[in-house]
Amino acid sequence: MNPVTLAVVRGSLEQIADEMDLHLIHAALSPIISETNDCAHGIFHPTTGETIAQGRYGLPVFLAYMQFTVQNLLKIVAEQGGFRPGDVWILNEPYIGGSHLQDVQIVAPHFVGDRLFAIMASTGHWMDIGGNVPGGWAPRAREIHQEGIIIPLVKLYEGGRLNAALVRMFTANVRLPEQIAGDLAAMSNVFTVGRRGLDALVARYGVATLNDCLDEMIVRSERQMRSHISEIPDGSYRFTDWLDNDGIVDEKVPISVTVTVAGEEMAIDFTGTAAATRGPLNMSRNTTLSACYVALKHIFPDVPVNGGTFRPVRFTVPDRTLLSAEYPTAVGGYLEVLGQVINLLFGALAQAIPDRVPAAFFGTTGVTTMSGVHPRTGKYFVAVFPYPGGYGATRATDGLVHATSPQSMANFMSIEMSEHRFALRFAHFRLREDSGGAGLHRGGCGTEYAIEATAECIVSVLGDRVDHAPFGIAGGGPARPSRVVFHTGGRDWVPELRSKQEKQVLRAGESIGLASPGGGGFGDPRLRPPGDVERDLNLGYVGPDTAATEYGVVVEQVSAGRLHPRYRVDEAATRARRAAPRG
Image (tube, rainbow, N blue to C red; front, side):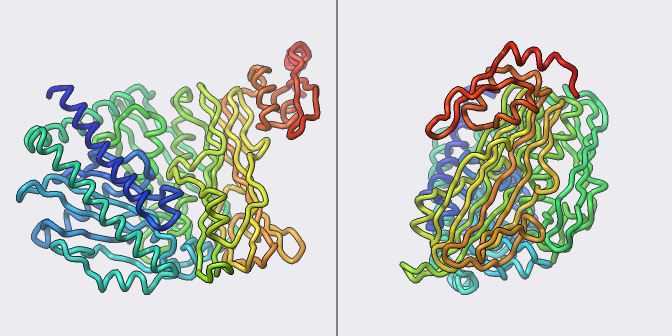
């Protein structure tokens, strides 16, 4: 295999997937896609269904489970006589694909002549999917039918002809029919971009050379991942964490993993995890595997993501647990579970390779939805706000502050756009001081914000991580946990389940305040250079009390500052304090 040809082909395929991402982001009507980038695109092997290339602008978890969707589709289509040009399939059924009902997938074959060359897939988040709660995040859902309409694997286009009756069925069952119809059209048109790019690549290199490249890309990724795994000390590493509750009953819910490394292979076993919950904090087996892939990619970022990357990893996900949801289990809160699984892998592998593994990231998406009729336009709106938060620190660096969720990378909608389109305004939106775990390297800070209704609306929030804060590693401290506070009727109050509340009425002037966790710290905080602590103080990442008690530094305030006080660390006094026995 000519290495230059292989590199060019790989880069070209990734560029095609990038263009598909950007086409949908620019063409979609819903801000959940155009602002938040809640979408993904991939190109898949025509025989195995394995990922070949992925776009860089979409959500990582989609790209992992789209492979499973394509592989399931290959079996179904084979039973129906094979692929035909112009056919496009659509589904949102979580037990076949992944995630939750809002994430709709469409899949299309690409032919060169009469031969199947590749399969393309697009996932886009629909702002509303029907169901009991606007936006789809229903913290008290007990079955999937309460969460929205289920789309089984069916043809959206057959021989290039749109099934218009199917589209009418979709739009009749959602609260935002015009937006959904527009987003579906944009998703379908993405395949035109993909076909154009693939045809140009075929014209340049020919099918035979490209097929060799596709196979070689997968083989090389597998070889590279096996090399990384072989560097992990052999052994079994177990870690357990908890969800605060399931949205129905206020009892903590355990999730456990055992990672076993033997040579160049890894086994991930979730035995010991709780049974499927009564509420919506569950996810399908496909999504559980996708979460593991995202975690491994964070630990080994240099490995190209394709089907070969994960061949050396075997999984045990026991049936009827919250990680292997089956019909009719509710899955609307899967993002909370997904974050926990990623952190579980970090916690387990930190015991073996602490130099390579980050501490826990903020670990909750805490999606807040607000809906109602806008008094200016008279139109119904649904606003969706996922948490940003702090990343865990590593041996090399502090954690990112105010970051997107690593499993999704979904942006927070811009404040200006939100206040223009929806009947709300932001009272504040700022970094959350002292929210990152203390350490030699500090965890990233979370975010806190308050949203005030400017007309009556309905608010739901589905989060976690109030009772069980993100952990630190190698002696680093935990982050501050999540917080949700409503202000209604002239008083502040916390929901009974702390981070979960369904269909709360907010009248004009009432508000909800939210604060996301930071990331866990890495290493002993008393080893952090005093100059770094001084910088953290002056940037508002930590406060003077934390600097003194957690980091053992002696601080003096040198100016009040117009927006924030300025501090200076006394390094000589700090050395003396740190040398004294800890009491």
